[in-house]
Length: 551
Image 1 (cartoon, one colour):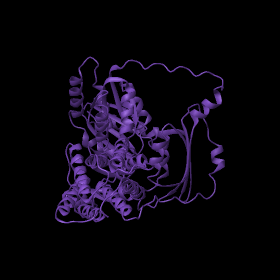
Image 2 (cartoon, rainbow, N blue to C red):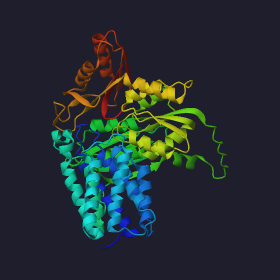
Image 3 (cartoon, rainbow, N blue to C red):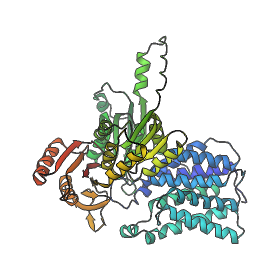
C-alpha cells in the first residue's frame, strides 16, 4: 500500500479507540502506586472515545479533515495527564497533515514525529520512561528508517508499532520506580495499544469493541420497589454489571462501592449475587457513576432516565407559554473554579467563595470540556482554577488555552484538596491578579498534604511493605505506613507530618468513616497535640478515608 486516504485513516483511528476500550483495564493494572485510582487506561479510553465519536460517521476522503476532527474530539474529551498527552500527540499528527489528501510513507513518519514534538512542548517537565519516551523513540526510529529505505505505508505502520513496543519494554530502565515495582509505563502501554489498533485496521483487521453478553433475567423488582424517593431530581441510573476478573479489574469491596455511590447521589440500592451486581441510584453525574463502576466489571444492562425532564413534562401544561430566558448578567471581575469530590468538600469550597465546582478527583478525572464549561459558567473576567490533583493540572492548563481569547484564566497548580482549600482561602478581591497568585502560591508552600486509602495489591514501594486491602498513610505522594485499620494509619501518618511549628491539622473524613470514629479521632488527637488546633469535618469523599492538611 502506497498511501492512506481519509476513510482508511478514519477506520484506523476508530479501530485504535476500540482496541483501547477492550484493553484499558490491563493498562490500569500497570499503575505503580498501589492506590485504587490507577486510571491511566480509563483516562486514555475516555479520551480516545471522544475522538472516535467525532469521526465515526464522517465521510470525508481527505486525511486532514479526519485527523483534525479526531484531534479536536480528543482535546475536549481529554482526561488526566495521559489523556492530555495523547491528545497532543494526535494534535501534532493532524497539524502535520494540513492540506493533504492522502498519507504517504514520508507523511506518516513526519506526522508521528510532529506528534512527539507537540506532546513534549505541552509538558512543563517531561519525564523519560513514560509515554513521551515511547512516542519520541518510535517516531525517531521510523523517520530514520524511512530516510534509508523505500517501504510501503503499511510496512511503516508495522515498523513504528514494533519500535514503540521495544521502547515500552525499556521504560523500567529509565524510570526507577517502574523497575522497583516490576511494570512498564502505563501511558506507554496505552500508546502501543492505540498503534496496534491502527495497524490492524490498516491490514484489514478492523477491531470491534468487545460485546457484553446479553442480560439473563430482570433486575430485582422487590428491591426496586422499596426505594425511597425524595424531592431531588437528576438522573435515575440503573445498571447490571458482571464483576472481574481481578486480573484486569479492581477487586470489588461492596462497602467501599456503596460508600462511593452514596457520595454521588441518593436512593441507592446495591444488590449482589455472586459476580453480578445490580445498582439503582439517583445522581446528577451519571457519567461519573458509570466510569467508576466500570473499573470493577463490565455492564450487562444499563438505563439512565432524566427525572428532571420527566417531572417537567408531567407538571407543565401543554398550553403554558415558555418563560423568557433572563439575559446573562455582566461578567464580574473575579471568579474561582475548583475540582472536588465529595459533598462536604464541595460545601467547604463554596463557603470560601468558589463559584463553580467541577465534580472529579482521583478516580474520575474531569475532561477539558468539563473545566472549560465551569470557567465559562463562573462568568468572570478573571478566573482562578484549582485542579487539586496532579493528574488534572494539564487538563486545566489546556482548558485555559482553549479560552485564551475569552477570559483570563489562572491555573493555580494545586495537587491536593488541602492545597486547593488554603489557596482559595487566600483570595482577596481587593488585590490584583498578580498579588493573588503570589499569595496563593505562598499558602501552598506552607501546607503539608496527606491521605489514607486502601491498597489494591501487595507490593513494596518507598521501602514500605504494602498489603492488599490494608490502609496506607501517604504523605505528599510517599507511602509512610500501611496498617490493617484506617485509624491506625491516620495516627501514624499525622505523626510524620506534625512538628513543633504545626498550629492546625485539618482532616476531611471520607464517606466510609462512621461518626463514632470521628469522635475517637478528635479525642485522641486533642490529647496528643493539645497545642494544635483541630478542624475535623466530613468531606464525604470516595476512596480516601481521610484527607489531611497540616499547617
